[in-house]
Image (cartoon, rainbow, N blue to C red; front, side, top):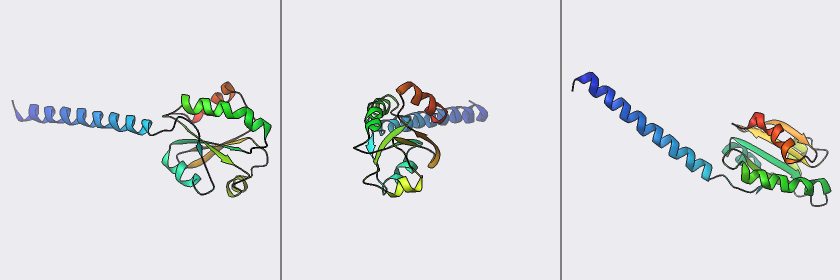
Length: 140
């Protein structure tokens, strides 16, 4: 075997090793995604949006009827989109900083974060299909 063939063989082997490691890393990251919404607070939101590529935060309150209507949709999508999106729930009665920061005047309000940045806000209850259509541009 000449030197060029040996270099090519080493490059191919290294490429295969890198691809395998990347695939395993990707699977490990996806398995770290929760399959149900997590509790978000004023204090935890910054770390959560930095940790995951796409985060949807459901701003709600116990007394809010429409919030209870959208809750099963959020639960369902958290399981269905696990590995792509993380869903969180922020109780606006217990956390006032985030609702003030994002000028939330009505609930339910969904805050959408991508790569650590606030990119969109959806206001009001919506069904699963409508929410999926709204989220599609942000899902990789």
